[in-house]
Amino acid sequence: MVTNNVSTRKTAKKTNVRKKATKPTVKTGGAKAKKELTLKTNSKRVSPKAVSKASAHLSKAVDLLPPKAKATKKPAPVATKPIASTKPKAVKKVRDETVQSWYDHPELYELGFLKETPKESKFLEAVFKKYVPFPVKNVLELGCGSGRLVCDMATRGFSMTGLDLNPTALEYCQKKLKKLGVKGETVVGDMTKFKFDQPFDAAVNAINTFRHLDSEEAALAHLDCVAEHLKPGGVFVLSLHLLPVDGDLWGTERWSAKDEKQSVYYALTVVETSMKTRLEKLRISMLVKKKDKTVRMSDHITLRIYTAPQLKSLLAKAKKLKLVAVHDFWYDIETTQKLNAEAVDTILVLQKV
Image (cartoon, rainbow, N blue to C red; front, side, top):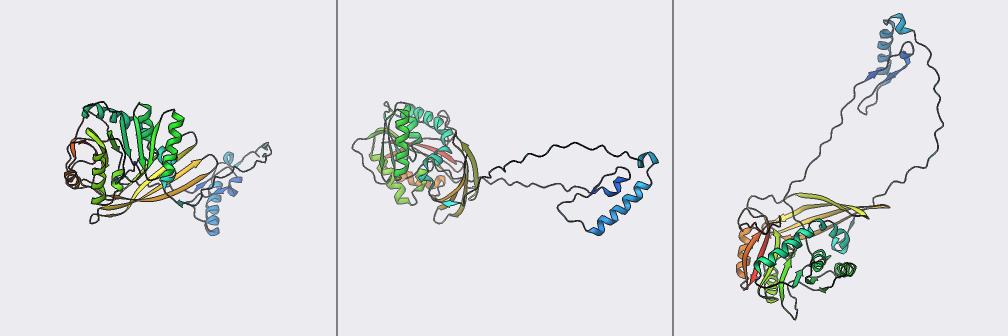
């Protein structure tokens, strides 16, 4: 599975830029002004007849000027320097957009979410201290992807295990762990049917990864499998976006991120949605600007739609997990919310019973 997808209900901002039309101007400068006529228009051609007519009006205007105004000195020649020949600057070419999974580019995918990672990790630590009756050491992340949380939590002293379907992402995660000088286990596997020999103190499913499970059966299988791998009293922290009762099914969200190597501009747009199937299709676009090239990439993902009543109905079927708290994406351990029609950005704390 994959991790940390953002589904949005925001309306895209539209930009309307209008250029001001410039008025025709006439330069006057004595007798020579008859020949100096400049017409500035809004990118429209001026007919010779119009120019001739304007010149005639200008001639009459000059004849009416006082003698001193008509008499003009011959302008002194202006010394000019020869223009040095320079090579034209190379223009960066934007390659044609390629369609490929952004999860196969974990370094680009991760960059868009790194800013929030320390807040998430700090919040998880607070959750473990508040809701788990014993010290949390071993933590499992489902759909860990590039391992941004696995790596950050490992630097905080936790024994981390990350599970994901994408071996490229897990390989990237291991390289990061090695670079950071910490250890962590990564396993290629399906988050609806996985098996570990030892139970975990806590488990995590980050932003919207859960919604990749596109059926009720898959979602329930995931919850049951997680519960089987938790110690009694351990918690499962599940975060996802919900659709409010009066929510907009369509929208686009744009954001950007950069590091020392590149700048990446992201756009996430809902392109198809169905309340009957409870599925929405999103188009992910990335414009990657590097020093020597600019590349466009796109991908499509399908996520399951949840309202608060639909999520509550699903949780009622997961008999081994009990909902003990609901937080939001402000990552404030002291603030909770209700799982009702107004809930949108939800972080569920489910405890093994």
